[in-house]
Image 1: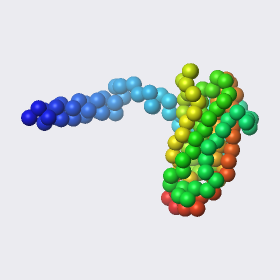
Image 2: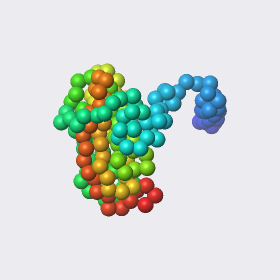
Image 3: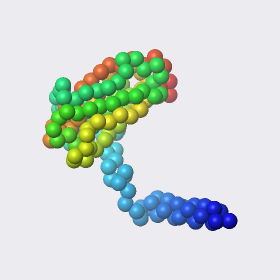
Length: 153
């Protein structure tokens, strides 16, 4: 009996919180961090501009970990590490995807700028790790060959 009561109470609380959030009554950090323009941008230059930066510079202090060949474009594991002091943002970009910006991570002060995620790739393409350190952007690139399409392919 207690489990049923707990379940009903939890379900009702979750529903009320969901309705409040959808009505805009609760602040959400995820919505505040969303940069629609950056995620809709085409190409690295447009992404950097939407993020408020200027032309990025290639840097050996940015490392991109990505496979040379991705057997399935639906799930491609990539990672990025920045050795640049003052890194505040790390992004993963896929040049030939419909939306170039695949992932964007804010790096809080005192946190190791080392991220990894799964992305989708529709076709073989250059993949970029884009890092913001100070007021400048830096990048590393690697070509990833996709043998089976992932973005609807």
